[in-house]
Amino acid sequence: MDDQGPARSPGRQVTSGLIKLSMVLRHQAWQDSGKRGLTPTQSQVLAVLAALGRGVTVSSVAQHLSVT
Image (cartoon, rainbow, N blue to C red; front, side, top):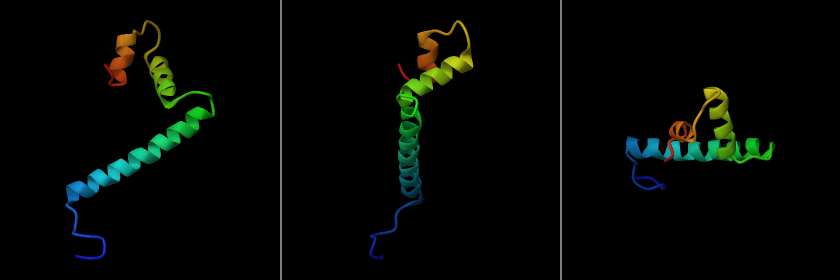
């Protein structure tokens, strides 16, 4: 053992790394979207609408965003 406690399992280390990466990406999304006066969710919806084209439904947007 060292000053930082017992060794963590590889699974815990990966989980911790993914959480930190998620926080960085979320922060970046807020910065980028805020420049356009949008929230990250609004930016995601617009990106999905642009990718899917005409005739898209609310249900299909929700499915692409993994929301119900």
